[in-house]
Image (cartoon, rainbow, N blue to C red):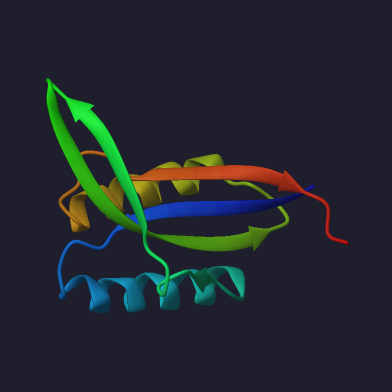
Length: 98
């Protein structure tokens, strides 16, 4: 079964542009392609101990036939350290190619 994997990446500062290029290059090398929606960052908001937090995110997408959950978990943990984030969301959806 094919999957669409989406990674929600923070874009809070200019040095993040190089990190996004590195992430795109790594995902393309591993999966044969990657799409980053850099022209339309999304804005997120959530409550953290009564304080409103705001974030801008770029979504990176990869299509893959198999879903190696261990690899994705380790990749998420590495991105969290690399980007100094408490949590990076990576989600997968089963898809049918039409």
